[in-house]
Image 1 (tube, rainbow, N blue to C red):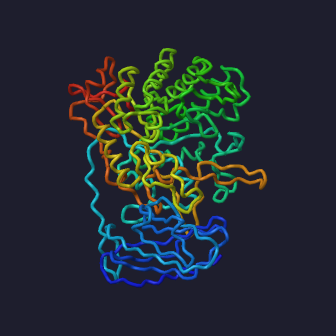
Image 2 (cartoon, rainbow, N blue to C red):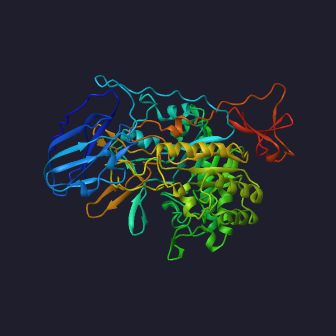
Image 3 (cartoon, one colour):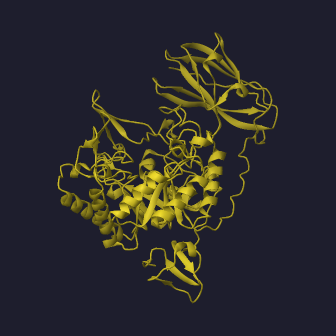
Amino acid sequence: MTILCALLLIAMSHAGTTDWYLYFWSESNNLNSDAGQFTTTDQANIFVLPSCSVPAEGINFCVHNQAWSAVYGWDSEAVTATGVAVSLATATQATGWLALPAGTYDVTFDLSVPSIRFDTVAATQPQEPEQPEDPEPQSSTFLRGGDLTMAKYLEDWGAVFRYRDGTAGDVFDILSNYGINLARLRLFHNPGTAVQSGGTTYRLPIMTTAHPSGYPYAGEEDILSLALRAKQHNMQICLTIYLSDYWAGATEQYIPAAWANVSDLNTLGDSVYNYVYRIMTRMEAQGTLPEFVSVGNETNYGILYQRLNGTHVNFGGDTRDGISNTVFLFNKAYDAIKAVSPSSQVIIHHSYGDAGKIGTCRSFFQNMLSNGCRFDIVGGSYYPHWATEHGAADATPTGMLAWAADMEQNIGKPVMLMEVGYSWNPYKCPGRNGGNWQGQLGLNGAYNEATEAGQEAFIKALHEALDTDDNILGYMYWDPIFVDQQVGGQWIKTCWAEKYDAGYDTWWEDGNVISNTTLFDFTGLPLSALYREIKSRKPAEVPTGSEVIEATAQPQPSACTKRLVNGHLLLEHQGQYYTIFGQKAGF
């Protein structure tokens, strides 16, 4: 298919301008490229794309700004026999594409949009609008983190991350510069191992182009390397030990293939202990012991199980068949962590970290405690989208505070928000597979909108909420970096998983469901939720003459002031400084 993309500018007489791009997409011909950049004014301007040769299935197109934060498409009724003439004012932002049937067209755009605010630049010499200054870092006592597990995977595909001025940089540098001080790293047992799910074979992505031998992203070597980068950027680490080769969540916990045939509880427990102990020892050897370790991911029903037709496929710990096995396996992991690093705080992570399922979450942790489960922190996932799905009357951070207060009162443990996310664009990256799909978090539930400004307002409200509750240690954003981008005219093939096609005897990418929930836009520029809502990680100073001590009769956290000292959360009470859990902080 040939597209002639010379753009004829009819009028360009006013200085008030912004840059727009015309984007084409034809999936069967794998055509996805910007036809070119053109400049509009706030007056009626006509842009003509002559001689569009369209394939049989048609062609989709839209107009977007450079950051892809404003995307305009047209409904199919705009098609005429001779071409298209539509106003941007009558188009719908990011809700549709104009599909042209086969043929040759003279396509005309009328982009008179008096309601759009344009940045003023010289029409004859376009230049970047002046960037507002970043705010001064605000003092804060909570940890502000993000999941950085797929950093190497994205970099190997060529993803580019930028500072506000457009300068490319190391993603750890950029995030640290904007106040991220906690890196969540998710470790899988043997990533790349195939699993069966819903009759389809899946695996975590493997980069055979950059690593012909099949580099296992999110495996031990990758996580150890990322941990070093995190520490080099003065970040704390939250290590999530998945105890699975594949994604594990609230309803499915795939037992690693290496343990699939284990049918004895003690043998499985020993396998867990030895594996976790080895990981912790390797992290200790390179000086990257994690401050936090979560055992499993969203373990609403336990760990190390897989169910088929209501019963186990493999032996494991599923609370629906009794809680004793679950507690036994959790405690094996806990003991291995503490044997290497007593100061590392162990988290059990439940998916209900919002006001919609407080009772369910409370019952889970109460049952764990009453059956002798050992852990230090209650972990929860909080998304406005899922809070709304869970029936929360208040899906905002205020509602989340009600959940956290209930955990503090009834479980007696500090809280960590293991996952937080908010869509900044109504749709995933345009032009990619499923680009007209809203993605995993839709329109953010009760918020019913998805914009960059909305994401910034949400993060601001979250920070304000966390500042009111010292029992919440912090949060980790999901996923700040899992971007979709074009690099050198080609899409980077990021995906959450690869799907096996037996007919072609090959693996295909299965899409990126969170490209519109990141903290970077589709060109790698940071979004305002990242660079405006900066929370300082500069440590508070311990007053001269004071010392951090290991408490034998530590006061209740509610009676203390929480301080961030040398990158560690401490409690100050009557001039004395305590570790939060009565253990030596190791600094």
